Length: 257
Image (cartoon, rainbow, N blue to C red; front, side):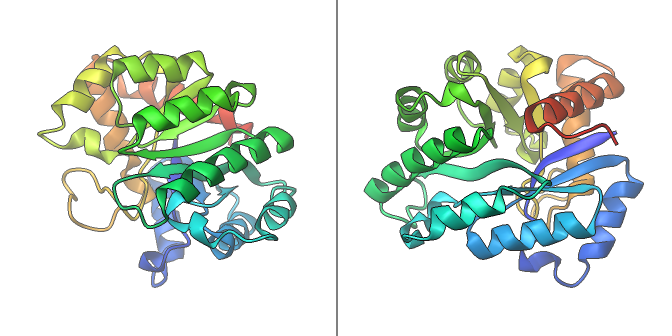
């Protein structure tokens, strides 16, 4: 059984066939799908999906693209949403200095605030880091993120960064880009990473793996990520699926199916 540790099932790309997408994942041996909010409305939708489908859990938080819209009531709303029994983490939070949809100074401030909220709520955090490795590591260290830990989703750093993340109690999540022919740096990194610290994800509807590159991604495709990791590390597919699922259940405190 597999766990897709990061998807966005609430997004409009799934509006026409969301039920079928979830059923396909189940049919392919996906134990759980963890759907991740990016703003308040998205978080509420994620929770509704978690209520509707036994195999879906939710994560709530404000994506760095959207932190410019945080107002005085946002964190109180998140506090209330996290009380739901199927909310398992806070996120995705972090920094995106590639798109810069929110000003960088606001991203830095809101990232610190959401780390503080995760610590207050004693929830692991899901961290978005794009083109901001140095700043992400510095803030995680300064804000003592190790007190709750979490996962760096779609990890794109090097082995030195990975080691520093491990030291702070974080897992690293590997997306479908690992299957791309030219993703040699990520493939070599994964070869070195301990299996006990890896999660796998789709980030659906984004980042579809080969042979679906350029098309809509969906949770059933997380099997291609596991298969590629198994080949890179010369392990059995079942060993990778068991370990990454166990890691996800441990981090997010969700039961075996």
